[in-house]
Length: 136
Image 1: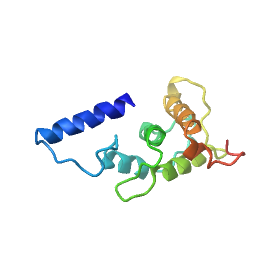
Image 2 (image 1 turned 30 degrees about the horizontal axis):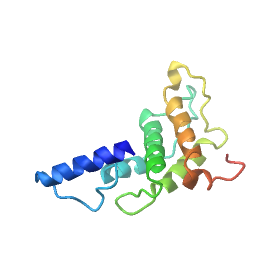
Image 3 (image 1 turned 90 degrees about the vertical axis):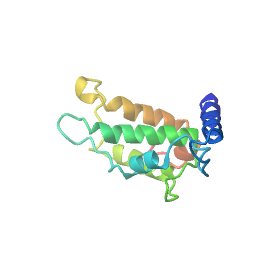
Image 4 (image 1 turned 180 degrees about the horizontal axis):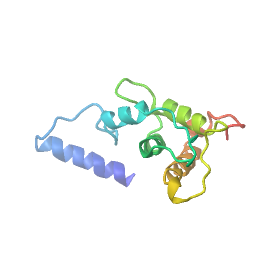
């Protein structure tokens, strides 16, 4: 709540001093470009020998989980729900043979981002309630 308030106050201040005009998405905490980039990342797959995935993919999932947690109906610039891509990523990661081994070693730096994403998803009803009992 405080983050939204501070973001809104900065948006008003910037608009008042004429640096930028207020936009229709001023209430959204994240830029459309950031959301578009996260949604465009390919589906995550931990299938390699090190059980590590590209950091960009893991962080994109974590970013989407945070964005949807804060704004359940947040969309990309094209109007696609970020939640839908987050669900696709979660389903990819929990598919047998694609999941992380969660060993916490140095080769598993991306595992924390995925674990955090699952916690955020579980605390986001618009995501968690869409998953089946088997997926949970």
